[in-house]
Length: 386
Figure (spheres, rainbow, N blue to C red):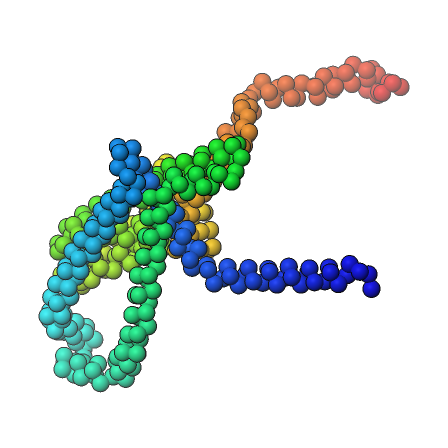
């Protein structure tokens, strides 16, 4: 046996073990890595506000705390307002439920010629097996719901802590990163950081603008239908639909549908139809145009990046896909050499040639035919040269 073979086998086994250990560690830490990624983009989003306050002499830690405190106060106030509104409407709907049930039973009796009564319907529902099974499952699932809520709160706390450190210690973090790089690489890293801040801010600006448009459109609809708490519901739809990817629009539309049902059951159908139509308008018309202007990427690239981000990392990928792609595109644009495009009609998609170009193209063929006719014999045959 060669002397190097045992050492090579041991080295190969050690490398394979290290690879397996790395894969295991990555799968165990994937949740933490996603939280850190979200925190980093959140820190990039609030970096302009923190930078302005720090430029006026305020410490970055205090400035970051004030920004996060303002965000927390806004979120808590909005949740409390919606919670009180939702509680009032649920109480009103429960009180009016017998009236809704009587109207539904009367419509069924008059349409299908039946003789149903509210007492019989209530008894059959209360004594049904599926209701008892649902109550048992709900009672056993309380612990799972509590664990999910606590896990979500812990994730939010982790994200806010990391984003606070990233924003408050931003200069120190950049200095530590640049200290291990040569001067040429330091300039590239700082330029990439600046581009990421600009693109993330532009993306949030576009989301805020779309939230304003969505809230205004839904406010007009709710005012026309006479649904109570229309301003609060419009704010809810605008924020939730834009900052919760993929299912945000339908999740946001559930609450207006519930309140519209308390006014008139058919109003809930109108709200559902409007939500579906507006979602298609936003996905294919509004969002690509606004996103391409604020983060300077093509609408098709913006749409494709959201799909790719969702496929790779789910909701987190859909949320950060556009600013990440815009940052990468702007950073790589400095390394792509561009040339002046030739003045050719085919660049504009036109295949029609000018008349002069067509004549010039067929002119050599005409000259050849004339030469052949000149060298032909008088009897119609060709010469020996031909």
